Length: 401
Image 1 (cartoon, rainbow, N blue to C red):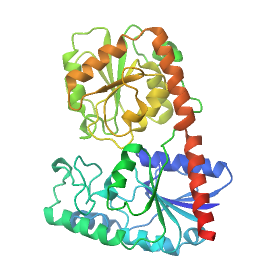
Image 2 (image 1 turned 90 degrees about the horizontal axis):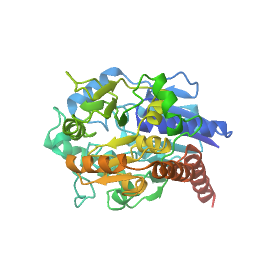
Image 3 (image 1 turned 180 degrees about the vertical axis):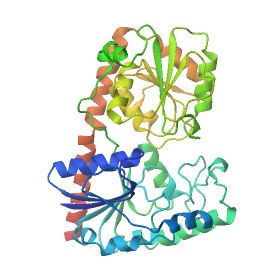
């Protein structure tokens, strides 16, 4: 099978990591894959850069649109597109892709579009806390607005998306979680076929909590403290990751000399308290060692579509304390392998931490084994790849009839 996949980048961000890992796995299984990206970070030969005049990137910001202007129709003229059996789109936002190209592609080839967030279902933002409007679009929250975003631009973007969605040809939508699939079911794209395919991670060579003490020594982490881990792309400056709630938890527990809060990602804060340590963002192999060193994973995000960090932390054997966002309720069984806190309540995050930190060794061993069994079965890279291959084949078989 020949697959052409498209994403903003090849190695930066959760969607990029998933798309790249899926493509590599498909290649390993003997399929031919070309991966078109706007930002190429790695040096893999199957990844190709979508050349764009840089001026269009700045012009799109100036004009307040991330769905027009871009010269992505040129993809349709490439040998890779012409040879492909399936076009697999991932994130089409990030000021690089013209949505009209999606319409043209879908009229020439079967297209699979994995929605890694809510951007496709909103005028311009990745997250929404509202119910869909009469047109099936979710309203963007006020803090998602950029300095150039005006009300009339949001209205234009929604109107433009609605028009283009009405012109789509053969397209199949994929949601990585039940939560996002439920959003899709009530949306502007609800009339298109949709499937649930869980995100998956590569489980090879991943340490877990059974290697904690040796890894703590390697990473110069204290052996006598409980480590509470917080991981976020952009760290404390990412508005969706809920750093103010984590910061309040740290402040409330500042007198606990037996605790160490470890924050990975983003820039450190000025004058951090004694029980807080910052670590710069790490590659996946190094990050896996920090998961294995920790005792609890803390997810204070106010908005998530899936959060791959949950899979990584859980496979390492960590109980998770989280707000009930995105796929968290699909992974965390309250008071068993973690704690689902009341939204926006730091006090309930603290209650959750108190509870899971009190788990005995038998409970922790059970969490490790049950987490690894769950993720191996339903949330591994192998399981995700198999599900996509099954979907691709069903689409091609249906097309031949």
